[in-house]
Image (tube, rainbow, N blue to C red; front, side, top):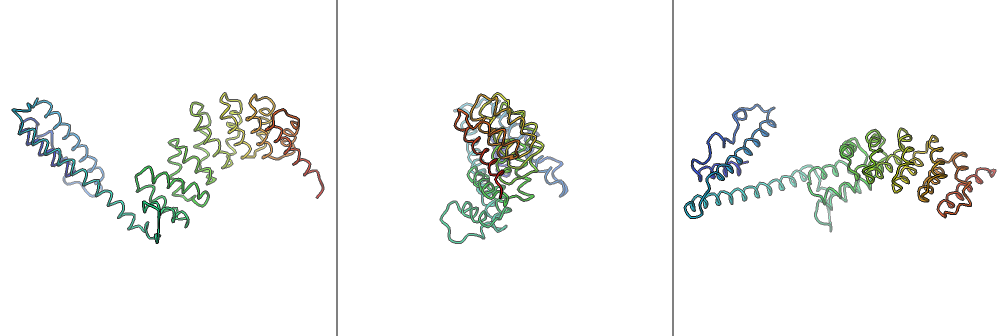
Length: 325
């Protein structure tokens, strides 16, 4: 903020009367004696005042129609003020970076490091925290290190950890991202078997305009065994997109609810896409009741190899069940 304040003052002085004094007030009156518990609000007011001041300076300069020859001194002063602003902002960014690393150090993020070969060191530490199951440190890095590289590696670490990575804090983080339709977060919730995500994800089942979101959602609903999703998923067995229908079938198989037997059997019989039919057959085998297995086994002479394979496996399961121990 100091760099911006100094720029506003220098630029206003350079253009003399080109800027109205009241328009470049960088410290709101309400913020001068603000109580401690109003610090955040005061900070926001200060930022707003600085933005208004910068706008006022820009408008004032535009209104002067400076001449390269006649106003050379004024232009030079403005350029000097601009250079000082850029330098100040760069220094502030470097300080912020230093603050982040110092914060991580103070909270013990780097304490796990001995000899390491991966760079940056934050990544090396992340790998060690993953191996030790330190979910809180992974979340600390995810929050503090604002880079796409580290964000991806933090989320991949949580995905690999699966159920080990499921804590109250990690659930809160991932559910927040899932609420914004983040497919990576949705996928991780599946590996965690996070039943808490069911309510949010069921809302996405009908997102036919976003098939990638549907695929991620269906898979996770299956992995978490969301019984409330059986009806909505069963309806998707007849949706137009034949790239998504198999995901609906497999999700129903993972959930394993017998209510899905009839719609899956219908898909196996009527769908014109062999991949969908095979997925329906696989799902029925996962449900595993006699009724479900018989619905698949009758296709043992099927022309489609993938459907025939599912039928043969279903028949084998029926034969095994019928054989005395």
